[in-house]
Length: 132
Image (cartoon, rainbow, N blue to C red; front, side, top):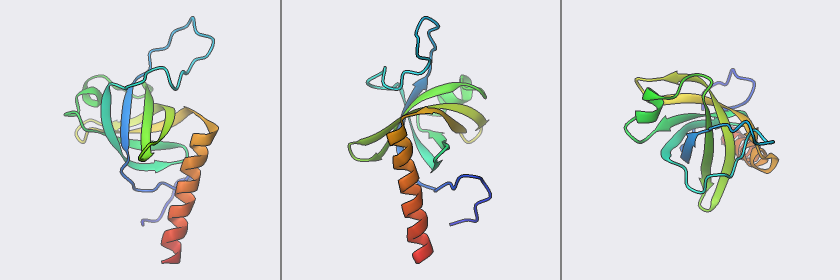
């Protein structure tokens, strides 16, 4: 495990991610609908995860991240952390690397229970490595 300089510890872990671009509807009273789409359009995986965001790597020939996504774009995410256990969130792109087909996402909307799942996973992983 590498030395962490960020405010929130990131764990290098690969989880499956389904995602799509959030299309905001100004007529809706709630800006973010975390569950509106039963099956999201694109597939990827995390390179790392923290309580505040993920590094997303696109699987589908890097087509969406390269062609459409820019800093500030918001993506609806379903992150599969265990079989049958998903985290729903909205993430805002804060950086991207077109050549590698990756981008950094900061969570801008996430259910408390899902945030707690990530927190517990990070703490358990750090504890496991510190005991070794």
